[in-house]
Every structure is written in structure tokens, then in C-alpha cells.
Amino acid sequence: MASVPSRFVRIWRRLPVVHQVRQSVGLQRGMLVAGLLLTGIFLLTALFAPLLAPYGFSQLRDDDGTFGAQVPPGGQHILGTTVGGYDVLSRVIWGSRTAVLVIVVAVALSIFAGVLLGLVSGYIGSWIDRVLVVISDAVYAFPTLLLAIVAAIAISGGRSSFWGGVFAAALSITVVYIPQYFRVIRAETVRIKSEAYVESAKVLGASTPRIMFRHVFRNATRTLPLIFTLNSSEAILTLAGLGFLGFGIEPSAAAEWGYDLNKSISDVTSGIWWTSVFPGSAIVLVVLGITLVGESLNDLADPRLRMRRRADQSVPVLETSALTTVDVDGDETPIDPLGARS
Image (cartoon, rainbow, N blue to C red):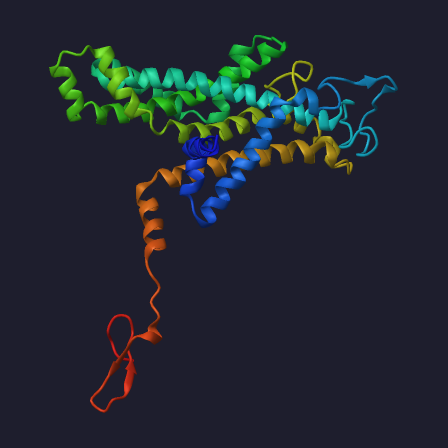
């Protein structure tokens, strides 16, 4: 029984997140922990949204009657109500679940398509590579938000259901991020396919699909966790931008922070601050948390920065006052650590 805690500690230390935190030092560790804390709160809020939210995202009344529009914070509505009569706290909490769903669907689809196309393009080459590179560059040249708007208009088709709205927003963001994964995976595949172990697999008679997915895939996708975290924060901003411009999810289908910000524009000039501050703060904090995690992991993945931090920690501090020399008269004269007399 005594070995159970030690076994649990070993398993705990092997977790990727715990390993990264233990590798970080100083300010970088503080940034990583702060990012993990904000991201964890965001994920837990999305997971337990039905339990945390006092009302539904589209609920306008309870047993006591209608909520009322632009009710200030306090009482039954801790964060007040919007101009449409929705509870602000409930909309913010339910909005976290919408953001998570869109991120998961958008990033998962873009990773699947981008990685597959990057492997095929980088390994096979020839005219397939040239065509895919041209298409990727053409899509990548469009501004991100403009391309998402065009894709949202083409995909939505007037659907206002929850899954229709979420998938329409997610697919529009997917179109934006496929070229990013494609370019990264293609560049890594072109580099890896000339390695000795790939050439050895060819000599041994391994098939092309086996080499691509058994040998090249593992080494070409090492940077995906870093890109995933950075793209997740960009996906939230893109989703908020679509909602703010009126191309996102309808309020009757799901709660979305960008849409709530759009409806609170007229409130700001009237001194009604709560309808915009809380959705805007949610966007800022979530994007900040995910960005801190992504940037910290990016620094930890850089071997030059990691070796520099270890070298800084291992350099001993010498006491200059302890270094002395004795001259012919028996007097002690202090010297500096480099050997020069003071």
C-alpha cells in the first residue's frame, strides 16, 4: 500500500502539462501557470454550464414574470440583463460552451485536412504538390475574417438551429486554418523524407502509405500542440468577429459573446456598461489564457532557450572578497574572479 502514493506521484509527474510546468522557471512558469488557470476555468465553465448558469441562454422569463430589458446588476440578475431581456451571466456562461464546441470542431477538422494534405503534398510531390501549394497560398492570401465571413455566408444557408449554427461557424473557421497546418506539415514532410531512416524503409520495401503514416507522420506533427493552442485563441477571436458583424450564431440557437457585444453598442453611449463589459472580459481573459499557454509551450519547445535557462541556473556565484593573493611583504591583496588584481 505504501507504493501506491509513490506510483501516483510518478504518473502525475509524467503528465505532459506537469512536465512542462516543472521545466519552466521564473517568469515563464508564472505565465504558464496563469494561462493554465485561465484556460482551466474556461473549460470547466463550459463543461458545467448547465449547473452554473442560473437561466437558459435564451430564457426571457421565470415564475415571477419577464426579466425586463437592461436591468442593472443585482438581485436575481447578478450581472444584469441585456437589451433583449436575456440574463447576462447566463449568456456569458453558455457562451463558453459555444466557444469550446466551435474550437473543437474547427481545429479538429482543420488539423485532419491540413495534415493529410500536407503529408500527401510534401511526400509525393510532382503536380499534386504544385496544385495544392497554389491553392493554399491563394486561400492564405485572403484576410482571415473576410474569408471566414464569405465561408459563413456560403455554409450557413439560413440555418438557425444549434448544431447548424455551430457547424456553420466552425466550418467557416476551418477554411481559414487548413492552409496553416498544410504549410507546416508539408515543410516538415519535405525535410523528413530525405532522412536516413526513411530511405532505409524504402530499401526494405515498405509501402508509401506505411512510410507516410508510420515514419513521417510521427515526426512531422511534433509542433501541432503549439499551433493548436495558438489557433484556438485565434478561433475565439474569429468567432467573436463573425458574431459581432452579424454572421455568427443566432441568439435563439446558442449564446455567443460576439453577438452580445454587437447588441450592446447602443448601450455604451447610454451609460449601460454591464451588457458589454462582461462578454468582452470573457473574450479577453480566455484569449489571454490560451495565448499564454501557447507562447510558454513554444518557448519550452525551443532547445536554445531551454539550454540557456539551465546554464543560467547552473553558473555558480563567486565571492570576490574571498579571492586574495599574498605579496612578498605578507600583505593580502584581493583579486577579481578573472584573475586581475584590484
